[in-house]
Image (cartoon, rainbow, N blue to C red; front, side, top):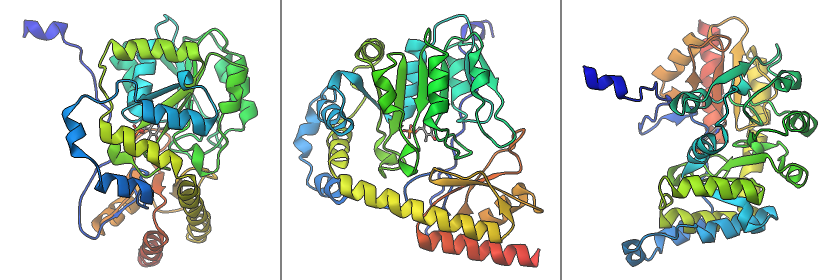
Length: 352
Ligand SMILES: *Cc1c(COP(=O)(O)O)cnc(C)c1O
């Protein structure tokens, strides 16, 4: 068809499946196994629905103010979006407009190459080393911008801030984005580096550590100048992206710091004991600082374990991709869920 010539053709991102079975154990999309903060639940139940008649605050003021206060930055340094996917997508459109390729790791969040293709941004991947670490030397070649998650996904490995700074330092003429979707599970945020580098953008999300994947809240923090450019593009694209409930409930989640810290501490403790149990069962994995473990079994192929788990309604993530086809990404659930996973694996590996 002639009209097809002018169509923007893309291969979309494939998210982890969202099955909905009564007794399933869902460890495939890194959601939080605990409910949102009690204050959020209370506000949601008591919400004044008459307010839904009106358009929401375009500047998402309640949420931006809560985040600015929490992270000790100016509100002009905070940008909020509908999940960090929305934030990163807008940031790609705003900041990556050069002719040189943007750089990101070969094993990383698989949305980056999709956005690059969508916006026709040239890109080049830099291979992680044999221990899944980023080599900062790779990021010292000419480029149009840099993005990497820290901790990285799906490896879970955290890079020391000295490595992050080395990459930023070498890339003062482009924008460097650090995707901190998992930083609350034991990593260290690059936020303090904002004082030195006005080309740094730090992206975080409420989907994992704040138990609110369903509300779709993400944000980024950067210099006032960067945030202004980003907002200008956003307001040229769609003004009213974030709905009123998300703004109000998101702000409340930020205010309940005690609950947030308690939940993440619980997930970290469960992760550490799961590491021991998986090791005893013959799994190896990089030392995750995220809410998941990227595990390979010494003898049994990942694909087979994935299928066996799936038949028992235990969902984990597996990719048929070079370098990672023998790995399973297992989200940290509740202690009971991890007990059930480990019990199943023990039996399965014994009887195989
Ligand atoms: C989950 C995830 C995101 C996106 O999360 P949102 O739900 O859109 O906020 C972004 N980056 C990485 C590395 C992730 O794992």
